[in-house]
Length: 337
Ligand SMILES: [Zn+2]
Image (cartoon, rainbow, N blue to C red; front, side):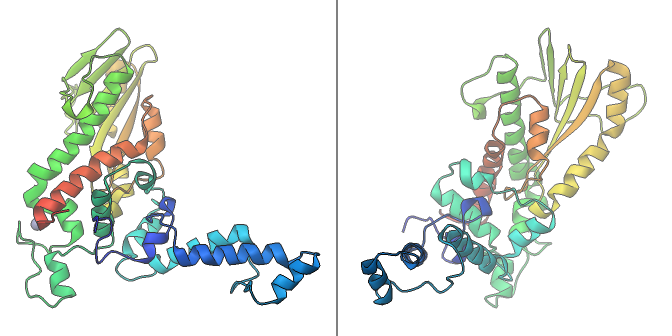
């Protein structure tokens, strides 16, 4: 009724805690089971005769698994539901992949980012691969044409639409990339006292911002003595007094590739880093800001942001990515959520 649950999204996931990637709803049956367990444990060691009679009357039924104490009972229920979701071939594939690449801390946005319920359900349905893509139509519903409606060359899967379609590279993917870049630039400007507008999405970054202690370069080609092809990271922050420089580069690959993309970014800018250290007499560091198109981040993501000396919840950047991803899914698949 309210668009909070896609009709084909996973049902077990509804009751899994948000920190584990679920919707965090309290199940009525689970609540009853928990109350029964709690009541049973209260009565079973009671010495009062009347209480003993209550227990033996059968009015309080013992829970199915009496070996688990009440405090652990909720955990037990949640772990069971999580495992049910994770072990499903299609719906559980996303979370299994996150575990495989050690990105299981990627659900911060579900706890903190406060997305509208319809946007949240669209992203969860995309993670569950429950959206009606042409590949889904062909493989599950028996259609005949699995190829992407935009590029016509690859199977139209959720992964292809959100991060692999050549037609969207210069439009929707660039817009998403720029949104994260703009958001982070706005945060850095606020942090270091450069003038900014109130809303980050109205921020118009300048190529160079400079004060006595800080220099901030946006999309700026660095001139070096020897030829270096990767010489234009998205952002460079220079702290003059500390003699430190940070080379920041963004990417929004598909979620399975987040950790690999981070390593690629660090490798890509190594030559530039050495050259900047030599020419500018600073200690330089590469900061890859990589957020999966459906929200995944690596375990290092928080530390990369802390290195930049900004007070920013990591989930706010995840939110910027997810809003853009939701928009492109709606436009491409004609979803009116
Ligand atoms: Zn395509």
